[in-house]
Amino acid sequence: MRIMSVYLFFLALLAMSGGAYAQQDAAPNVKRAEAPAEGKAAPAQPAENWAVLDDLKTGLLPAAVAVVQRDEQPDFVREMVRVQWRHIDSIDLWITRPKVQGKTPVVLYLYNYTDPTERFHDNGWCKRATADGFAAVGFASALSDYRFKGRPMKQWFVSELVESLGSSVHDVQLILNYLSDRGDMDMDHVGMFGMGSGGAIAILAAHADSRIKVLDLLDPWGDWPDWLEFSPVVPDNERPRFLTQQFLKSVAPLDPVLNLPSLKTRTLRLQQTLSEPVTPKLAKERIAAAVPDSAQLVKYTNAEDLLKAWKVTGLSGWIKQQMRSQKPKEVAMHAE
Image (cartoon, rainbow, N blue to C red):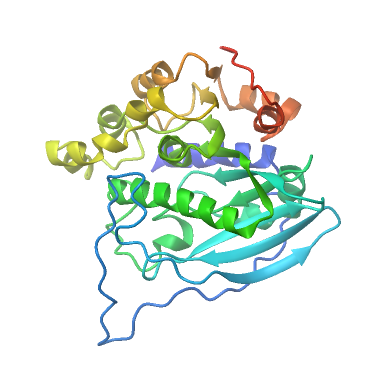
């Protein structure tokens, strides 16, 4: 689809600004969970309650954590840790810590569902993300990257939107539980960066979990009735079934527009690129209108303006600044 090619180019520009696609280390060859052998049924368990954001008990059975890879660089230590709480849905957490003593504040990074996770084992990205004594944790959302493996082709992030959002919100909370149990993270200082579909998930996760103190969003999805009707991400031949009352009713509780006004998050920034094609103009306006009055709202005309801003602060400069502050600033900011 032509519009998706434009958007992927847009994402590539953003990735290059953060060094995500600089020369990368070779990714480890890691075996993932296999489907059950023919004739063997998957273990029975209750269905996960995707519609209830803080329900971490129904259908979720945490398995033992496995450290799959660990390597040291001059400035940081990087681990790939495998966690799992659903049958045949293991999650690779890329955890990078600076070489400092004591517990470190931590930032979670969740990009759009179309983005691969290679950036999380790129040395340049890891060095920048952990600068100034911060840990960085990156992962893929449900029904994206390797977590799409084994699913029928007709199922994808949007067609299974309730599962994609609900599962990923549960993932964030369970990841925070794991990080807390590790003992090397300062769980009083947790931030999260979310982009695109990852931004929508970050909003819902922050609504469900007050441990996320600082939230930085770039072009988050939301306002599902308008987004599903007009976003070019949705193929025209599939769009009618996403506009049925049944589908819209199922995703309504998981709409970021509904959850933004009552966020528990102490500090929030919403960045919107006006030329970004995926989220329709009306949806952008409704998302912006839903942010609390204390939030920072920054609007960029195009991707070039966004890159100029990031050259000054970097991808995570703002979120780190807010987390350092004992009393985060509450400033309205507009850059039209």
